[in-house]
Image (cartoon, rainbow, N blue to C red; front, side, top):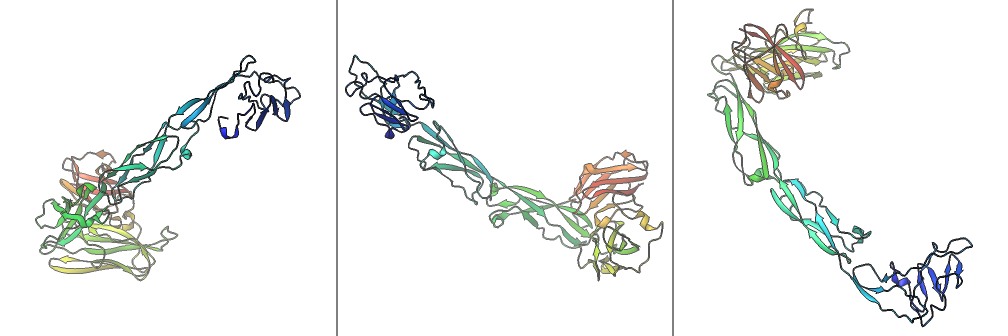
Length: 490
């Protein structure tokens, strides 16, 4: 009756509840008749005039499947005509007696709507990202109700879009319908945070005596076409201070101005200005093939390796980008690349090839004259002899008897010999920090130097003035393995 009063009637001692019938003091349960001899209520107590509205409810738990019928004790129970929100009737419990003619009056039960709270979840995104999925939660459901008990589920929305700037935006709820509940909304917040923006100064190459180039930057991280919102900057600073002398300088950008600066967290990264020697005292780079080795079942798949070296008689590094002025060409196949940074003194590198002619050409200045010098390797080039330069070629983690390691142009050092400060340079394939540089003496013991300072994006300066004269090794731990350089302290 409580679950569905529509299928239960209270008429002249007749009740039908959950498909169970009680008719004129006779009950039918599990296909068995329960009559006056089984005490539910006797016929004299329940008639059309006395207790005519009494409901007697029994079911299969009262009348078993056996031949014997044993009913549990009957107890009066008040009934209500519903348990959803709204106004319902209270049906009083039966008062069965032979001495009174009992009539019943219905009471009223008003079931108020409980509060169902729907809360929007707070969200966060980075400026320029699409909005995350918006979600919400419920609290306050009664009985076995859940979100499927709502006639209409709530809509959720925010004013933020993909172009909305850094800040807080409301997440709002609306439109929920639940007959048995009073809806209460708790709105949320979508927080838009600043996007990361990297400003990297571009590398530049000029010659001594040239005017400084127009410095530029590469931007990584702009959203929504915001590069067009630059209103000023960046500005650039050279370190060390540049007077036009040949050398390597760090280009540090700063001060980028944007129309909407709060939308970005800016990180500045330095570039490098190479001023190559030119004019009085400038010396050309001299590439050279030292020899070739014949390979058998080498992992590279090539049959030959060419051992190249170069000489840089200048007191400063020379940077020659790969291309027209620094070319490595062959009519066949090869693996590897030539250096771009030529450190004072010289360096070495290896190229694996198939035996066809391989030509390395470098064009640099001899005083004021741009000069081209080339070196060739082929299967007929001079072989490396036992104990020759091949025994001291640059290999990963190996000590070499040259001023610098230049394994495929990855690292260089000058001056060497050194009296006080020495500079280490490496190309942009190497990842290294000052903590990954160690100085060892000839006995392999680690010695301490006064300072190791980054001088630019691809280099460090080490103060070796406190060391006694002798031979030392600079050992670098890089992302490409260990590199070891022999250096002489005067």
